[in-house]
Every structure is written in C-alpha cells, then in structure tokens.
Length: 391
Image 1 (spheres, rainbow, N blue to C red):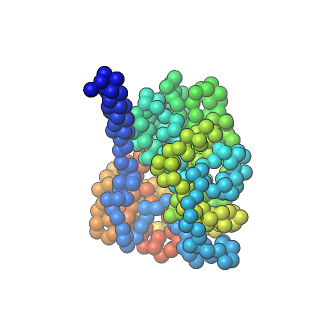
Image 2: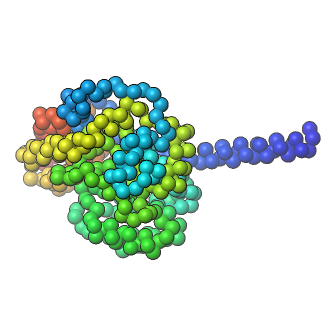
Image 3: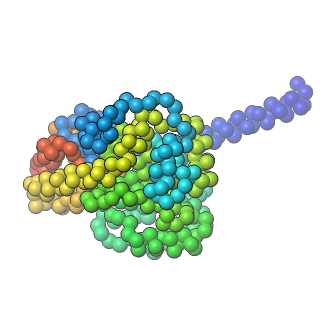
C-alpha cells in the first residue's frame, strides 16, 4: 500500500473514530417524570397525573372550528421550518419576524433544539429548579454542567443573590419555566427587569424561557411575550393552554442564527410537522382567546371540586395553581411519595405523580384539569381516603 493511500486511510479511520466518540459521548439519562409515566401505564380508573386542562375531544373542537373544516386534513410534507402562515402569526404575537420562529414537535423539541444548538462541552447552564426534567438530562448529556437555582414551593421571593453566586464566565444559558409547574409561580415585571439588568452585565449569556403554561391560568390571555431582552429565547406549544397535546405543535422563538442551526438538526430528527395538525392550529387561531377562556372556566369549576374534598387535618392543604392546573399535596409527617403513589396505582388504579420526579420530594403532584367532573371527584375521593388512612 502506498504511503499516500495509507495516510488517507488513517485519516478516515481517525475521523470515523472521532465521530463515534462524539456520538457515544452524547448520552441522555431518562427523565424521571416520563419514566414514572412509562412504568405506570393506563388504563386507569382515575387519572390525577396530567397538568393543565384535558385534551379536547372532537365535539369540543367543533365549538371553535370553522364550519366544514376537515379534521383529517392534508397529509403532505410540511416545510422544514414550519408552515409559513402559522410562523407569521406567531411572529406577530411575539413581536419578532418569521425568520425567528421555528415550528417544533411540542415544546420538548423546541427545548432540545435550543440546548443542542447553543451548548458545547464545558459550558454551564443555570436552571431554575425544579424545571422540566428534560432540561438537566439534555444539558448533562451534551457534556455541559447544570447548576440548579432553587425555587421554593412557597411564595418566597426569588433569591437573586443565589443566581449571582452561580453565574460565571462559562455560563452560556439561564433556563426558566414560568408560569411554573407545579407551584404556579409567575414571572413578574420586576423579575424580568432584574434578570435583564444581569444580562446587560453578562454579554455571553442567553435566557431560555419555557412558557408552555402561558394562558392556562384563570383570567389569562393568549397574548404572548418575547421581547423581554434581545437575548431571550422562548419555547411554547398548544399542548397545555389549548388542550391539544396530541397535535404536537410547538415553537421556538430565537435569534435567526439559532433558528438556522435548529433547522439542520430538525432535518435529522423529525423533518417536519404533520400538515393536518398545523392546519388545525391555523383554523383555531382566530378563536384562541375564546378557547382559552373556555378552558379556564373548566379549571375554575374544578377548583371548587378540589376545595370541597374531605381532607383530614393531617393532610397538608392543597396549594392550588390556577396557572398550571396542578397542586402539591403532602402530609404533616414525611410522605414517601413514590411508595405511596405506587401503592395507590396498584390497589385502586388511581394514578398520581410523586413530586420527587419533578423536584419536590415528600409531596404528590395532582392535576385537576379534568373535563369530566365525576372523574375528578372520584379520583380525589380515592386519594383522600388513602392519605387519611395514614393518620
């Protein structure tokens, strides 16, 4: 073999090895929340595990869709960046351009694309914690470091000094989730201003805001907000506030350079969204305020059902989150939330989420966005009986 051919072969082998190293090095741990769902499948007798409002049925959709709309829709390929009409609508709502909008498979893909496009091994990410479990899993899987900025379960103010102590020259990103699940905490105008002042002093740091629960809360509007600061990115979807989790229509709002990189990733991940799902969202867009108001009325009805439940004195009173359709529930004594939730699932097929899967051990995360009021009452009664039996 000639020396030139040998050298070329060696280069190819080294390149293949480098790619293998990169591929093998990108390992993602399972999300503890999603793993809990996987290990405790339905059918359930009662399901108290879902956040926000329940999924819309065909009859529900008929209230808001234009007459004659075909739910089967169009099954052609969509554009890699997403339907132009919906991107322009989102751009108008967020105060940006369509080139700064990418349609994604839910907010989960939007978050994944933002993280993979922005982070490199050795970067640091400050994450509001608890945050959606996907975020630390992906950050660590990319070889970056996740630094938790703890968010208390009560109404204590945000600890800005703790954030300042976490920030350093390697900080590439601050990840936030507001409205926050399951506490329902909102990001106030003063909070935004405090973070923007820090961004002015941290020129290499960006913010990713997961606002998937925006519009869920009672009295909330469909008005979306992006221009907190030029270096804010936003992920969102129609899953929570619209009640369309199965449509898998989400979006990422980001600088054009990030969107261009994300499109390349999309070409190798999911290519495009289902055209029929996008057509559905476009058809509902003019009715989105009415749709949100209808869903919010459902949460208001269900709040009264939760408040009327017969909890024993030793059960920590539910702290309802009108912003996310959830609340945290515990006991005066320490609750092994996973053991309790597993036993409830096995004995009565009542499904609840142990809050340790989302960062609050010792509590249960309960969803009350049911469209069927009797299902909610039945599930809460089973839960209350099991908790009351612990006393």
